[in-house]
Amino acid sequence: MRLPDFTDDAGLIALRHSMGAEAPGLFSPSYRPNTLTLEELEQLATDGKDVSIDDVVVREDGTLSYKDGRVLVYIRDLSQNGGRHWVPRFHVADCRTLQQQREQNHFGHYVVATRDDGFFQVNVIKGKKVTSKLMQLDVC
Image (cartoon, rainbow, N blue to C red; front, side):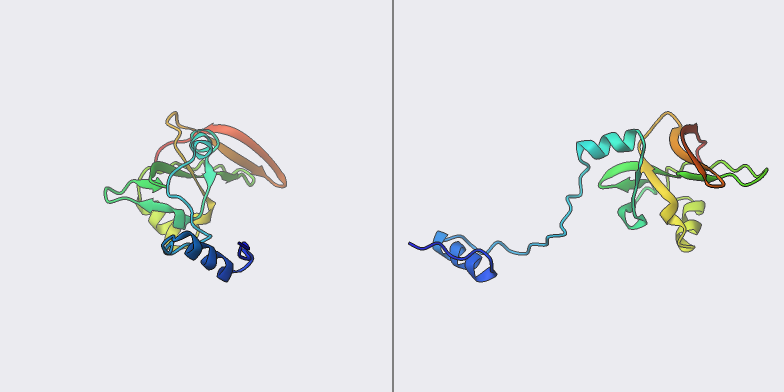
């Protein structure tokens, strides 16, 4: 018996028929499991992870989740220009600040994390110099 050509859909369909297997249903190559991997859990507990706002879900109780895991969000980049000193806060729920940022399309600056000690990896930007450091942030 000659094996079918697997380089096209017809070859795969012929193989499926020869095996007596049912049609597999829908398949999407962009499928991403909606659960956190061990590596992601470690990253969220340490440095945090830059994600799209579309990946952050507001739960019924107003808290935030990413891949079915509860998270908090904060701004990683802290720009210090002249004497102005602003320290970001971290957010555990869909507060008015996050809603305003989302409406103004500024949510791309946020990071998801699961740290519970109040310290977060922040990039302090002074001119062209960027210093990454662990910084204590207050809750919003």
